[in-house]
Amino acid sequence: MQIKLSSETERLVQEEIKRGHFQSVDELIVQGLQALRERDSAEPTHIGKNGSPADAVAHLRVLRNGISLKGLKIKDLVHEGHRF
Image (cartoon, rainbow, N blue to C red; front, side, top):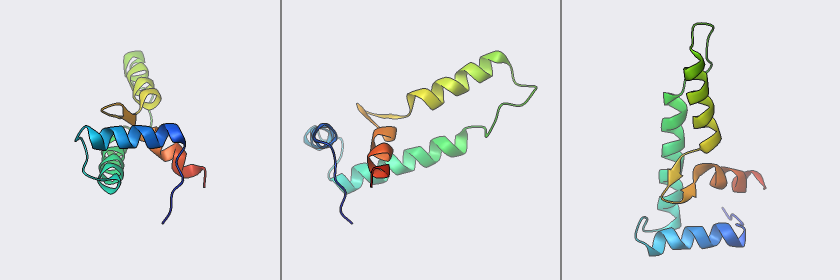
């Protein structure tokens, strides 16, 4: 599989590997996808009528911010993959 990355995304990936956070691009993607799955399984599918406003705000913050991998966000990788 070939994946084209923007120059900014490629720079971020190379930075993470250079810093020693990941040994390869493959490892970065695998860990990113695992983190995404963990987040998705931990999130409630919806905030019911009994949920408090604070619960709703916390849920929105999680959805908006994404999961960070030391500067690289999962949603950046996902959006990059959706371009193809």
